[in-house]
Image (cartoon, rainbow, N blue to C red; front, side, top):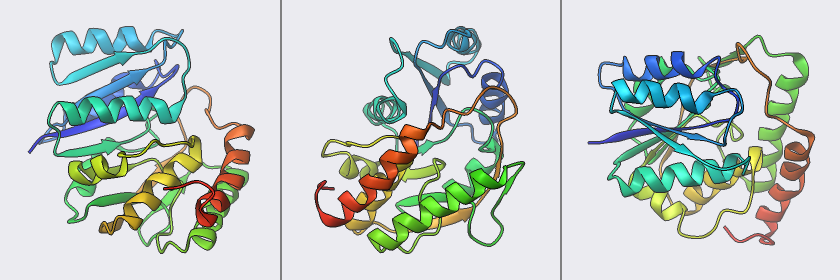
Length: 233
């Protein structure tokens, strides 16, 4: 079994080395693929130096900021082409704990969602506005799409390769929160088994959040579009 972790980066120099060390230090270390959008802070250089000492770390460096969704899609395609049997997606800013990866992988499901909103899950150091935005986004998606999962906007997920391949057969059209929702909705409509695994999400230790008003606005209208069939999933 081959597990790959895909993590997009943009200006994550302050966090990337602890993340790589945490993932590669696991008892069964996964292959780690960093997809960097030409970070001006030298994130890619740090990954390159790390990978020179550890062949289990890989780098895709892209020109310019092409966006979170396209970074994940590039990473997924690479991991699947390399024969991955499980693919984990996670943030690079240490808000997702590398030590939680084995727990996600231990679940017997086609897709495992790292969930803040099931018993045992939670958030640390999040301002009230962010908590309300996240919970509200998940509630908005659950209500429109009639999905049972409680955390639909999170980006910490573990996929079986065959499930991810089926989900990606048609183009993904969304970004940000909506991208996470669209992937889970597709898996649900494919009849995949989906479990939620409790995680504690910790606010980033350094750098600035990539969340923008445009990402939030997109999620507001994309979710109804998915529900009404305006966007085919």
